[in-house]
Length: 114
Image (cartoon, rainbow, N blue to C red; front, side, top):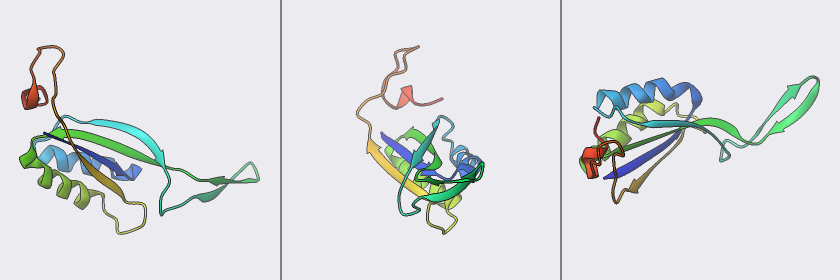
């Protein structure tokens, strides 16, 4: 099993989730995150005072799938999240040793399936 973690732009969330759903990957976690990279900071004016904003808001999507689905899922995420501009995000893939469904006691890939 693999865990795919994607950091994407805020307005790309629905598009990315639809692409994962179309592959049959319906279970996922989404959290708001902030980060700093090549996009760097930007300046905003609030009540007449300039403020340097060093961290950009992004979405973090986490999904666990079997090894055979990883390439399809990563390609779908990249295709649906890409704008071609700095700040499109990153995708990371991690090994998952084991998973457990608390309610039923199922383990492995069966614990991840919906």
